[in-house]
Image (cartoon, rainbow, N blue to C red; front, side, top):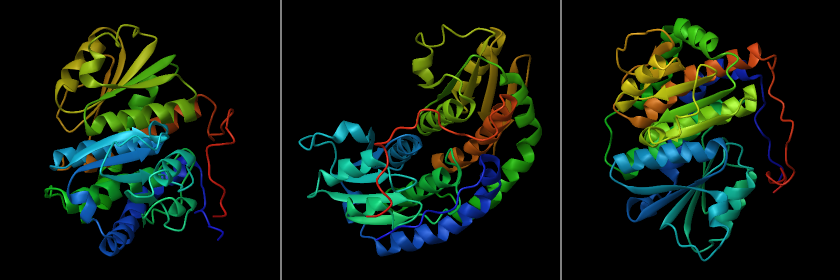
Length: 340
């Protein structure tokens, strides 16, 4: 069967589509989950498998599942290439395109396990490697991934609501919240882009669900801006990784806890710092604060935090003379063929 991938548009254009993409995905994913048998996700350990941006969605999703009372871990697909490795009781493979080799191979190597796949469409090649497929219906995407990444976060969030303790967040509001976040952060996003432009390296820092957001941000920076970037767990960052930072580098920090003091300290050291937070934090020299709405759900917060991150990166890419993301070093063995 030949699969039809959703159309691709420029990065900034896809960002504009995200509120409606999430509204569409909410209905499509909900129907797919209604039809799925999620029983195996209600007990034992859940393994979330991904690669690239989908690995970072998995890291965020696993943290949220744990916050809602389920045992969950995130693994890169290659960590499960040994079929004898027994890492979890059920697996969710995440691939925005449904064509990533690594999560598909990891689940195919475990034919007796209960496995699920999450992709922007159900009829993608990954369906041949998993037991049950969840298509998000997130629609038109870009390179790097935008709407499909948001759709993956939403699907993992809806799974957590069904198999874990409900978070109390009203997911029907997510599209409106995203639009409100776009409107309220426009000025701060512009300041952040100017502050970080031209830095030779960027660190992205967050904890738990936000550690996944930091990973997504670092990947986008490497792909779209071609600047060295790395994600760090908040507390780990304090134990040495911050030492190379100086006025020639920058840091994007996500969170409301220890992250607030970290951002202030970094700015005080003369390091360009952007803090994305739900807290009311005052700006200072070297510190731009992007305030997003507070929510009762870490993945909802991750979706809202991803939007200004994407916009900053769009600004940085354009400032670097890279308005269109084209991989220079694309590999030939990372995608399944479109005919399955």
